[in-house]
Length: 217
Image 1 (spheres, helix red, strand yellow):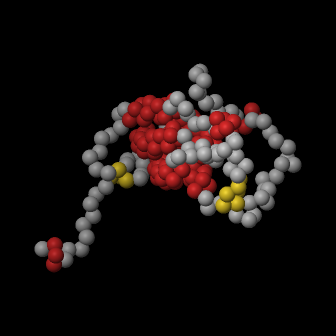
Image 2: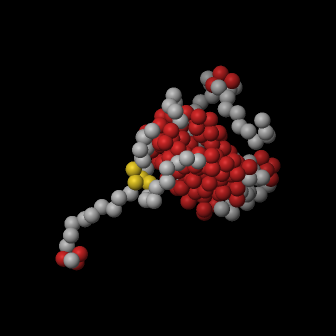
């Protein structure tokens, strides 16, 4: 196992916390929230928009995992779980702006994928899953069963997450942007692979004919 490999722990292996710790803090009741640096910003700040999108993406991957359980494509689950963990690291990077002053230790602590390993790993996975996929000459519609369709939704959320990172590009590591960009490609291929493994046909784009008018004659 390399230093980059992620290990997903079983619930019983995870440290439990006292029941006295409460989920609510009331600190955000006035519409602000805190970055990892301690700085408070309005909840409609670009940072929280990006964090919300990566959180939504991780949640969508969790739904895909649920649909993959005990299916011919369940070998994908471990990779999706690893990606969920990496999205937490993406969030930490986003929540610690590089322009933050006097917080050098926290900026260094939340560096994301400085050697580009995780982005390269996605490319390896994409190449592996692409082998044997049917070739279509038309656009592929989001389809292929529950798990595959959920991965297509995750892909679109991933694209939104990427767009929301662009205004923050000077405050996040370049590898963060690279990873999220490559992740949407992975999710597209993963969705197609799941459909193939589960034996569900994909739907392709067919141009729809509208009502003919005098201008069509």
